[in-house]
Length: 486
Length: 95
Image (cartoon, rainbow over all chains, first blue to last red; front, side):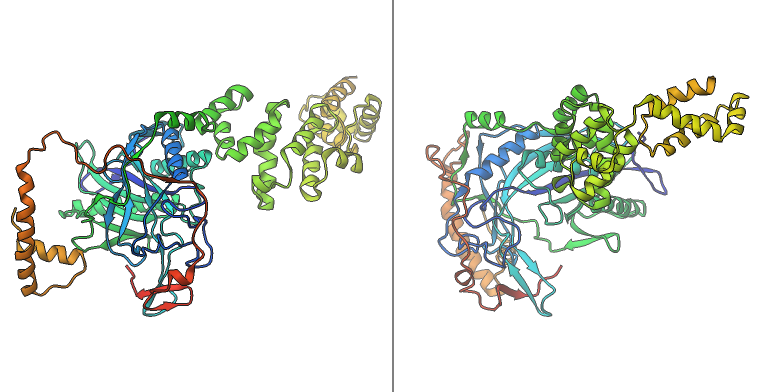
């Protein structure tokens, strides 16, 4: 693939991107308190006095959140640090009641790892993961309820997050999109984050800088905060890189600063200009002892990990003979892969693949349903395919049966009986139909015999029509050839 | 280590504490005294001694992942100087 470049007036520029992804950990309760971590809820009800920063309240670490962080680290094939520690990151904001966020600064629980991404042309790249740590989320500020005041809801305050920091290995918007999607897929497979970007379960800070083609080292970067969709991340990189190129080319300098992406105007703008915004004065959290975990526990968690997307993909290719492209679609979501395997196991795998990727997905699209609430269960689809395999119905009729299944929820065999759709394999009946067609189209028969081969399709169509689509197509072909030759 | 007025002013700003020039001067002197006293620790050679942030023996107590708290909005909002229904309110902050 040709590398992504921004063409300026003075030459070609390369884009350097690193992502910090905040992913909400799936857990019942918060990182340091027993309040519910569930999304939503009445304002300020999923809040304990710990989360609200009342004096004397002490944080107590949630074991499951640690386990989730370790699982994620293992899924990123990263180093797990048996010793890690919490630090205070100090800043003032209305939705941060304590005036500090408990985070892991110097000693994160997860060290170096990597994420394998695949680009649209099939090229595979590895994006390095620098580190991953646990930290608390902040509350939510609501600005549009009152002209002079902001309203604060602390339901999200204290919910556990993982911050996954990538190396500056990303070189294009496409790679950033692929990285985010892959990360989301891995987290969803692991069950450590639901990846729901609309609800803010995953959001990214995007670090962007540019340099001239062939240049060594990095130039000053800007950080675009809190971008909450894959598409916006890709757009933000594009416009921010262009902005920087324009500034460098006109002889200006880039200030290291935090910016915000406005997707309506498709621009980034400076967010915190205050000179001290980044002076977080980290220090070890005095309310928590360092976290020391046992290798044996890590091994236990590792043994219980689900099959990861890449492994599943390779296995599907091997076991069911699906193509690289097909395995990518089938493993995009674990639920799709599970559905596929339920259908394909013990059935004609090729048939299952074609039907699921074709008519079945089309039916889901048409009805606006997802695989989780599919109108047709995997077992029901398998039964339909079995009817094709044993020649009870042909493929064309099967499409009609599937539509009926989507509508009525009835089993394929019931529909076939109700509508009388059984395939006709009776040679006599098919021959009779063909003879009628040939007799009624004597002129076309003569043309065919004088060399107009294309007319064969016409005869097939007429025969199928006469038999209401129920004739066995292979037999129609065979008998037509025989009768036309006679 | 000496502490200049600029540093004192910066610390005050970071802590969102407003200080007059006169107060900066006062605190500069007082804090310089504290730092000077603590500076005595620099006389101890701590080369190759890792910072101590725990005894190394104690383990943090971990919680099971259960919802055991929350649903106490009135308590949570009890100290709010200005509330609106179920919310805390603050002077408008928009960036």
